[in-house]
Length: 243
Image (cartoon, rainbow, N blue to C red; front, side):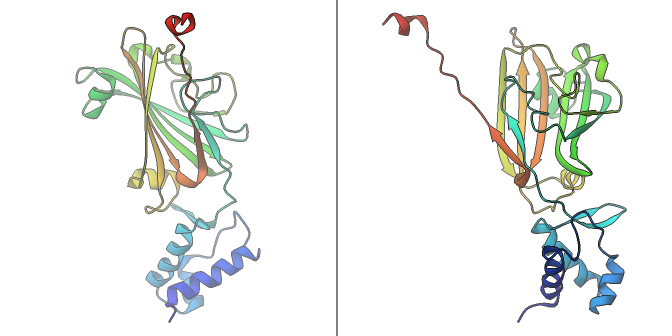
């Protein structure tokens, strides 16, 4: 026998897929929906959780539950390449950036290979399409290398000169670690996704020719909103060409 919260989810799903409730539209309050279906708010929230896991509904803190707009994927380009790997997606996306002066501690000392309390600049960036977040980045740069042009809170459009692009000097080596995992509570809240929805997590370390780490980045993408592209270049050395 179908549970009550699944019956409610079926009803709301039907209204969404048939267009009675349109993409981007706010659902009635949870109290009103619970009264309408003659159930408790906890049962109603269980129904909404089903739709959230399916990607049909997103909960915006302080505003309510909304029908999600159709997902448009972004593309992450591994390494620097000719496109910036953070804003390589679409001109319709825009990025908000917040910078904070911090001191290296814990795992940051390991990632950046610096002593404890080394001055750093943290860049917190979130990309959006309209009001929908697409990706989250926390980038750490040694304070003496941080570009002053992007310090402070700002918004920018992808592709705009000086937008959330390469922050550090040219790198001789970039190492990226990619994993699929569940989001942290902070990531789920920032990206407005279910805590049970998988994310693609990329840790990127960039070093210069001397081996100094010039940037460490944690990038997080909802699993259903990203394609990642990595290209391997085979280097032919002089001995091979002469053979």
